[in-house]
Length: 316
Image (cartoon, rainbow, N blue to C red; front, side, top):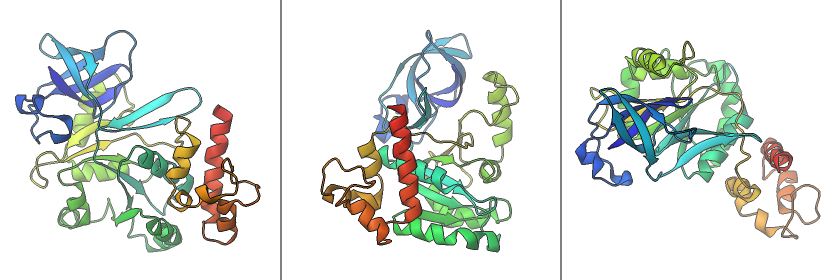
């Protein structure tokens, strides 16, 4: 029987059986129908390489438990890593919404790392600029937002706490979320939980139920979970995945060339350097350094790139 993973914590997963219509459909053409029977599932042995959004083969045990026997092929996968391990975040998603704000100030290096990971995984990403009613704080980050818009990053402005929800549903945010599986990400303190609770009124109740089933204790924000957006406001099949807030986002699983190709301002220039193995540091004839010196590449973006490749060198 096929099922999809709705929540995960450690080696335990909360899965939902897929209907017969879904069961016979290819992954990239899955109808917006879920049959609904939900179960607690575990893996065989020590295998833990599943995540929210995965479609899996399960063997049912009794009325409410199951064992995961296999993984269906993934359409995409977003993950982060450090020198010691990889963390799978979500699979088979249509888009990423990265929530940020001017108060507290968002971490640009962290946001840039997520952009790189999304680009490498071929997943569209939009920056959701929260707390946009705080005019002074927004003005402080607007120059950086303008820079990233020039690099192709879409932005949607909102105030998760104070906006009338009807404005969202009838505007840019509602149409952007509709008929999509969206992964919501962001560093801690950006208002992600507030946004989830406004979009999914029973999110807290479901989270508590899943937390108890997955034995995550009080750490209700330490695991990812997938919510169906209410059909009173959204089309069937509209879903949002709430992922834990984070303060680090390692990319040691990505190659140097993948990182460079994910940076729009690097892509055309890197291949024009005098030396094919140019590291873009102090080599003569480096087009990246020249573009940075001439302010064609943002100096802070160059610093972020240096940190990324230094991380690669340390983990090699």
